[in-house]
Image 1: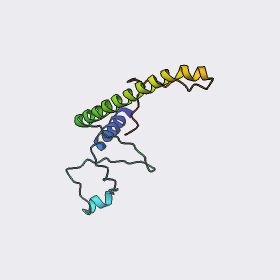
Image 2: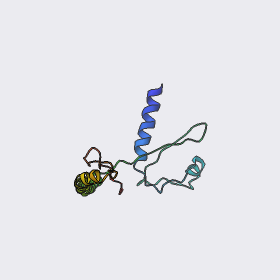
Image 3: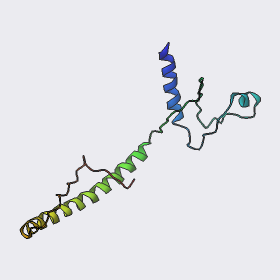
Image 4: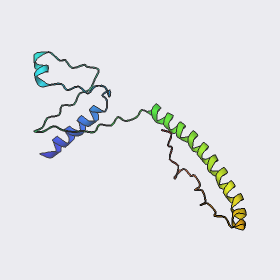
Length: 123
């Protein structure tokens, strides 16, 4: 039956999210049986078993505080980018007519920054 395996793997993925990034050492069954290695009750572990080496991607979910800090940083960067965008657009509109009259090439109109188009590249 696939469902128990799937949910077991899903639970394992969720448990791995609790691991610290530094906990990447392999723990072998023979080392556990001999007592050479003991599980740390403060950590989470995932047992992976298969006929070949396996690769997994485990993502830690951010905490509420981390999300709030990210949102505050994003809002601050958006306001700064929006102000810069408004200034660039005003300069372009001011200079466009003079460039056309002089026969010079008019640069493309700067894109206005909105919440939908803003991407914070500082992170």
